[in-house]
Length: 337
Image (tube, rainbow, N blue to C red; front, side, top):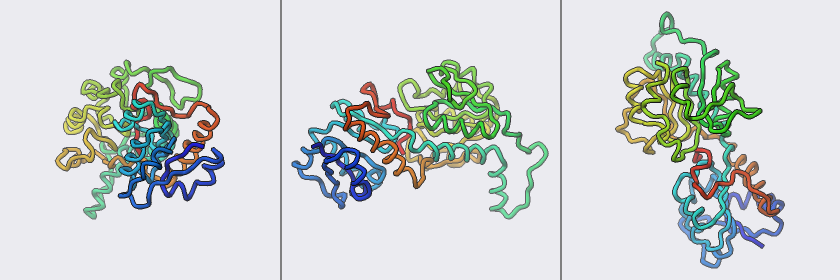
């Protein structure tokens, strides 16, 4: 029987579910002490490994030491969606099958995007500043914000996250355009789908530019200075993809000189965002520390919605959901949470 590498928490909470998915499978459990390492004989038994969310915060070093030292590892499933970290490419290079939980954090990330949109669309930043100063300063006159309904949102990337953002945005009355290489499919929660080659032309009619695409050679630098300058004056950028998808220097410039109305940014070219970055001090920028996915239900969604079903598929010899191609780990949706 094969053996599966898991964390102590997964072994404790999901032993029965794992046994139901693959009767007789052996569990190789990481030591409770993250500083301890599994012995060579345990590493040799490992066929599969589950990189769960609790491992990310506590056991990452010991997990990857074990997984990389397991000579017979055949499959690695990860709780996160974005696998552009080079460590995942190394598994692919040695022939290990890789699958992700892309979609498990779509709801909380999309809610963070919509929250950022509302903070920027409504006068919350002004109201919060006035509250801190104990000042009674109603918004009116030329400062009165326009209605959201009827504005246009352009969503770059229509995976689970981008599609959920689009669905929620349409509920607020926005017109939503999706940017994707493949044409519109039935059920896509957008009004129209255009290829990335039309992004610069589309920018001039965009009020809200949402980045929810994976980081690949094609999307790196996709939101160039030219695209940012082509955006409608006063437009907003909401980035939950990867910092490298946008030209950060050009983004800062457009925010500073007022061409852009503001931004909600969860990802950056360098993370953690350096203290000297001008983004910290820009009054029209909302920053979250690559944390937009934070939600208590993520681990359950990843394990029960993606890992366990894939374990059953592996047992039956069926194709895996969210399998990552050998061509590059960047093919998965661009999130690491």
